[in-house]
Picture 1 (cartoon, rainbow, N blue to C red):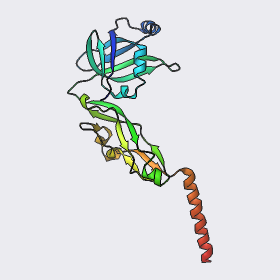
Picture 2 (cartoon, one colour):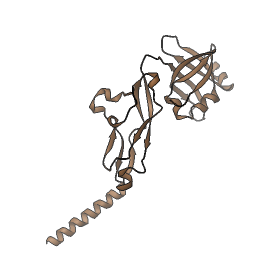
Picture 3 (tube, helix red, strand yellow):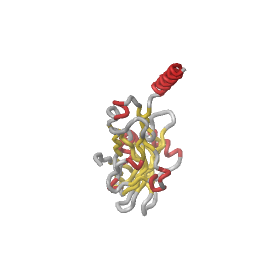
Picture 4 (spheres, rainbow, N blue to C red):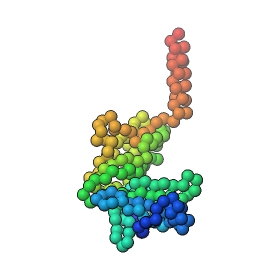
Length: 215
């Protein structure tokens, strides 16, 4: 993982809606860390620092370090509550991770070489994304920032499925563990609708001309 995220937090003892409201007015937000062999801990975090960290896509799929009282805890972001109409974070949930236990995370897909794909450059097709992220399971040390999907060789009428993805060492796709019926497509190339209709018209006209010639 090429990016490191580190946030500071304080233990929160004042709970309840009123306390949370006062925190937000002071530029802070309530949060919680749970999981592992420890009890949940209510926290207070600086809103702006968390908000800016959330602007980086990698934040959602990384192992994060939260420092509480000078001690660091490795966590992943599990839930985020945002204000329905303002660019404000209301609450954040973090889960502790272990070096020896596998975790489940949603990892973004990064599609590469779409403009030079065979089905696009040579066959005039259009790319369709069937998924933007996948759920993986792995140890914390193996967690990837994203999964690369190279579509260079993809042709019109074809798709790349979950089983076609090249996974980093130690990383497994959760859906494939359920059997072949869950091997869903993640990207495909199709003929644009307008081009398809035009092709159908040309074929129909050619067929009609052939019938007239036969008569």
